[in-house]
Image 1 (tube, rainbow over the protein chains, first blue to last red):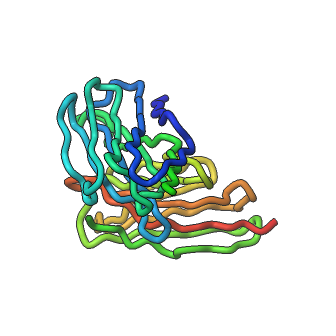
Image 2 (image 1 turned 135 degrees about the vertical axis):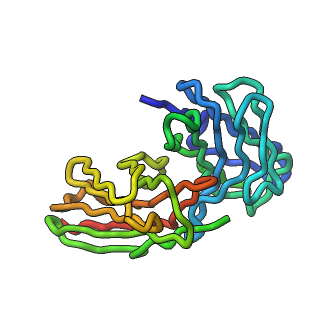
Length: 114
Length: 108
């Protein structure tokens, strides 16, 4: 079974803090994704990565950055947290294009910015 | 990015009833996925569909890949209280697109 692990289930941070959300997958997947999920808006793609040190902006990258130093780990960084970044953050990974066409999700990190 | 049209947005049903929901898109997809998300948890994959017309079951759940490749359907038979949650679809063409979810409440 694919396992996608997000390091924190709940986080409470203050406005202006730098926040790191960590995600690790154990299936040697090339592709990893960060989404935020808000009521009525569904899943929105923040950033994705298709290889180590490679990253691409998604639909809403503003205010975020990412890091992919190792294949199994994809980090989402909020450089200066703001209250409008309060949300549920979901990490996902996907196998090679010739294989699985499925995204597997972590359990999510619910972030509150005060 | 594109959002898929998923309906209904919410459903309140009696235990034992069958449930149907669907997703439609303006684009053709080569993959349709159905997930369930429990409150405070991440989405869990229920069914994956890869071919137009494909009908796949997972226990009481059955999903179909529409023949136009622009829609998909999920049915749950004989609902039980633990079916409660949010179900959402995802489709893949050049990238993944997600529906906004169907919230299911099962009344015992």
